[in-house]
Length: 261
Image (cartoon, rainbow, N blue to C red):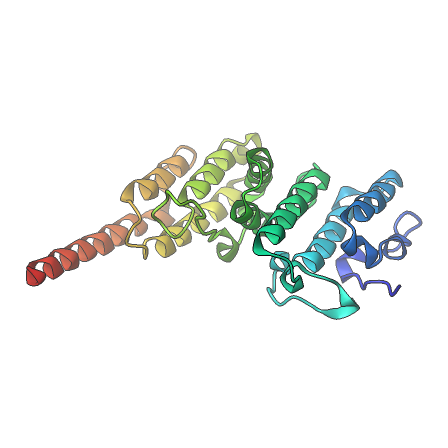
């Protein structure tokens, strides 16, 4: 069977890692158990977690293209993906759920061993297919460790709850930011706090477009950040802009109701 090509971050030199590409082939993608066994063998050789992480991300993206950062799934090597399967939607979702839960279980526990944006994409799929809460909680915990490395694009996780009236999962972001500011190392990393503060500022600007967004989540996010970063300068324009936007919508809504009567 033709060996799958590894990204540059997965191809390394050295006695412990020179045979990694040879030991993982396309069959890993066709059989999750086979992939897990091969991964266990690689771990047993003492390969560093930060080298194992890219292997997991690479092959996971092959099986589930939504995990790919470029969102342009590759079809080389004849790899089967969920999207190409003729099975029913229910069966596909069950397989995705099993895949995500298995993937979370084999992630290296060390911080920064898996890119934050990959974890956010994985959490998005986990929420969509309804994986067990313990797996989602684990992903949220790992994301909060390195939230300063997240991109705004990946942070825009949609809400998959039928009881939520907003397009974006704002409650998720509140949990992630809350955990981040409570990390012990945060007090030592002012740069990380500034990055997250700017990220929240940009997120609120995007989320405020949703007319169903209650103003309370926006205030809550700002209050959480203010616990460790009093009155951050990058926030001074966010609250007024959201208030103006909300007020404009309310006036427009009242005007429409008046003329419709």
